[in-house]
Length: 384
Ligand SMILES: Nc1ncnc2c1ncn2[C@@H]1O[C@H](COP(=O)(O)OP(=O)(O)OP(=O)(O)O)[C@@H](O)[C@H]1O
Image 1 (cartoon, rainbow, N blue to C red):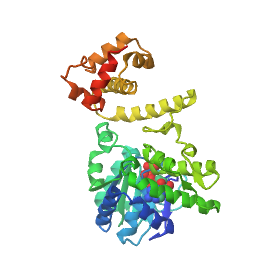
Image 2 (image 1 turned 90 degrees about the horizontal axis):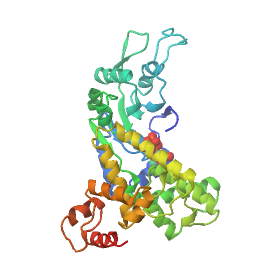
Image 3 (image 1 turned 180 degrees about the vertical axis):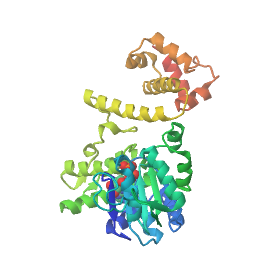
Image 4 (image 1 turned 90 degrees about the vertical axis):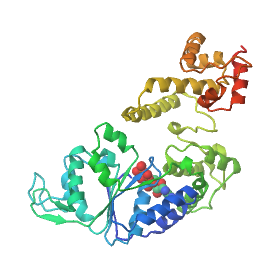
């Protein structure tokens, strides 16, 4: 959601939403989520929607509103786009002259959503001072406009969404625990697209249909290889990434058939499984940017042993990639073979000598491979 605020008329029921509903829930995991959402829709209790970016959290919030039977509007606010100095008046409204620039009386978002749903996206980004006030409103079920005295009763269903782990934000002192419990009475977790692959092709069809209507041309079809490539991609940008990828592919194909080569995943989101890796300096730099971003999130996490896990992951991934060949792995990492072996020893990654059986299961587990495959890798490791 880019715009900070979007207000829909009561009971918005557009064709796009109906189509989206049918598509969003094609995979059994999505259908289970839909059933949960519909069970809680009619109750006024707050709902927290968790999911990676682009998984359709806002769409699900709208669906909850539609199924709630509430007659008021759906008002969406993006916590990350809130101007901190104006936030209080934006949320709770203000009376005329209550601060410089407040020329007239204004309703806040809570009053605008009266009788309906207030959707607060990126709730983890809400400034702490505002979190206190939000908690009070949720408890008292009334707002007082800035510069006003009169409490105004509100009947608003609050739905929040986050792509970050709020528990870690609480541990880091960036999110109030009391507010978390107040918002988290029901949690709906939207799985990432890579975990509900049954949605990928129906969504792809949907987006290609949309593209065809928009460009007034026949709907392009996916070749078998293109469909396989879509299914194999890890989709870190989820449905938004799928939508953009297909739009680009349809344009590149320029005709009725989309082939695998027309599918260009954004560099930051290079495929984890299958697909050709990008190999120029600029794309490597973008991959580093992606890693840097993920590291930021990891650093916010209370997890310990970050260095050891990082080192072990780099070693395991490189060794697996090079079939456990130490010369190639050391070369790829830019370290000597001696250093590589020291690190492997530290992480208990030295393979058993050929023929030895001990430890094979635990090592296979660490490398994500079968013990028999590990034995073959071990043979390779000692052959130089
Ligand atoms: N089932 C679906 N059918 C069609 N389009 C969908 C579906 N689910 C999501 N989308 C589209 O994917 C995009 C991302 O959806 P949405 O904005 O709801 O995700 P989000 O999780 O709220 O994203 P963010 O975390 O960035 O706020 C939107 O363009 C939305 O219309």
